[in-house]
Image 1: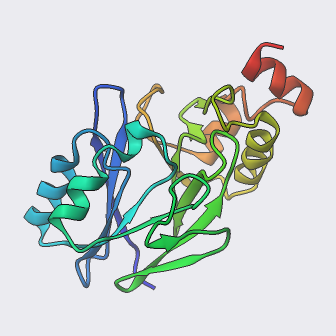
Image 2: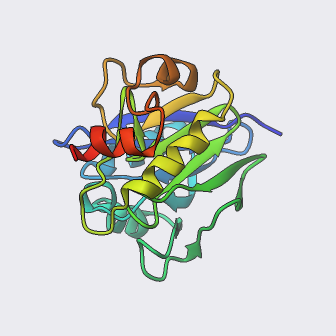
Length: 206
């Protein structure tokens, strides 16, 4: 199985990241969360000769999906998202689903909490975490549709991933633009909470 390449973009005035994932052998690619500056991703794909097959959304918040329309208009990419966040996507995502991209694959983890339909995209030792996990932080749990208990349980799943797993977050909120699960286990206070009650107190202040 081919290792898919991941390119990160500073995609908005709100510190969003967007991503281009592509197979270096077939030059088939996927756009992730194009946000407010989808032209950055589209231009890079064109420069590399990558054909976008998929448009992936980690969740449905507008700062991540604002560029969807331009990507769809400019390419033949199929929109893939969890239907709890994006009504009637072309491809409805669910836990454990595997998306083929060229000679590589992308696995879907359903990680509700920040939003009901939040998902993480896993390819090899890389995860694109949206607003579930940031470098040194985690997503909010006080928004409409958020659920702090579900967010805690989703983060517990991420803690079980190999420590060398590379974390590509949805926002540039940390001391670095990417990290690893090992680094997060050592430095992220939200992952170090001993139980749900401690997490709720830290995340919601109650």
